[in-house]
Image (tube, rainbow, N blue to C red):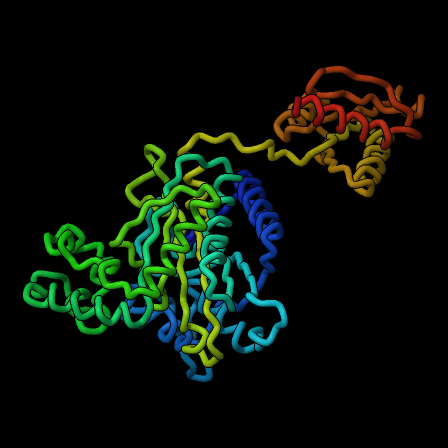
Length: 431
């Protein structure tokens, strides 16, 4: 039987995982600088969590969730996004009682959506996201956006575009909803069945429709910014003011609505403008979700966050032809020629590793020329060669693969000399 990876998933092979590890470490370090702490939630949750938070009119809930009944006849769903789980944990563990607010969280892990596979989009994908819960200060909106931009910039991306909008508060959205219904209702039969179902429940979602996005009524639809009340408009102005203060360029797009029902006030997306990146340019998206904590049984706790796909981040790096930092983590390749020398090679390899020096050796008893080729492929910094002559002298031949220089080093000072050689090679690369 020819069993292959399920459609919409992928194997990330050892030749690629180095890039993932670089990105993941970059993300964790950025979160540390901003003081966001990691939260790890279950991969599956009760289905009601997503229908109540994400919204039963969204594509995610209607078409994309992996839902199943367990043996206790409970409806469970593989998490399609991270905010709902983080907010559920915030409520369940009474994090709203923490003395330091807002509570600043980040997560990174697999999410699941049943959708058509495209470049950088899979049915199982890895998402990084942050949530800042407990503050209604527009300055935290700017901080959240700046963290997302910082991750992309640290990954070497330059061709970025930040788009923002305000979805307003409840009062603003009610007024806008009424205007949208009046606008679309006379011609709603010309729209897809999803839009027809959304007209009364959530007409704002019509603006996010991929099927009817070129319909003439889309271009003339009432703009939410025209219906913002004084408080919502003032909040949005402060967000823009803080972004300008941080020297973060942005564009206001009144048609940006995002695809999840819990958003209000600030909404944003970060896009790649790199040539050849593809038709789907969005890298990350997020926004404010005041009211979601209350919806899930907690006290009034305003929040804001974003999520980004690691797969699409890597695609954007590739589209800009950025060269990743040297992903090699191999310091020394140890070669032992002959039975006695091999025993010493095993011993030295173990000793190097115990001294925080990454080391590898041959386990196929290949010729020295073949082993040297392996060292090159593995991008080793140094090679240690031990033969009968070296054993007799209680030494090893140390070769720097960057310069070709080699020297005979006594076993007694070998660890110290290896560390010096590695430091010298690293400093030479940095110059």
